[in-house]
Amino acid sequence: MYSIAEHVLDLAGLIDILGAGKTPVRLIGHSLGGMIVLHYTGLYPDRVSHAVSIEGIGFPPGHRIHEAPADRLRHWIAAVRNMETRAARAYPDLDAAVARMREANPRLADDVARHLTLHGTNWNADGSMTWKFDNYLRAFSPYGHSIDEAASIFAGITCPTLLFWGTESFAPIPVADPRVDRIPNCRMITVPNAGHWLHHDQRELFLRESSLFLSA
Image (cartoon, rainbow, N blue to C red; front, side, top):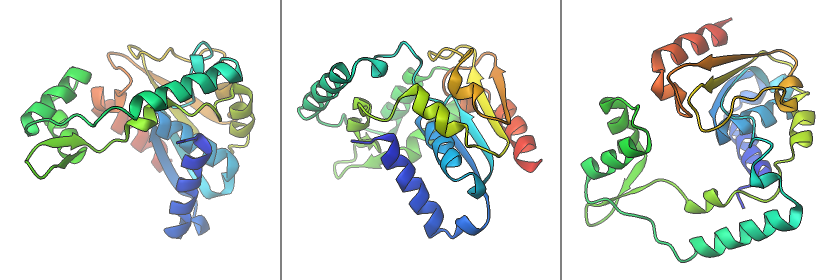
């Protein structure tokens, strides 16, 4: 189902396997990854020294994921049933896949688009390429996106937290959002001329600000 709880479980297991539970870790996540970072940090505040979330607090209040429970479940069932009939799209070669990457985000520099594509695809036996991505993730679990519940968990975060948001993102900048307001030690940087992938769109700014934050 790819629920938030299942993702946080994966992260908790990974950190335990790495033995990092004994020493606080520094976590950075983007979008869904940012949501996972904030949930984990709120649940296990003693295990995280710094948290960075790039446009990753959860869906905005008007999103359909916040509809009535029956509507959410019907949407999820319909989405899963639709994906059961779809096959992963294959691209004939790397250049074709890079072109699709650039189409999805025209702000990407050529070298960045090629790097992301090369490491984000699998080669098929016939030489074509498909994305390392499970389309079922797009169905959005009908559970685990409650704004009040997320705010309650985020309130447990004790480490410094840095949020990034692109001014040209499709996701609205969270203003008076309880999920942000409940994080005790939180700062947000809004990044001009950047969309949802702001860490690629304004890479130098992101690296500079996050490096300074993580080293403090």
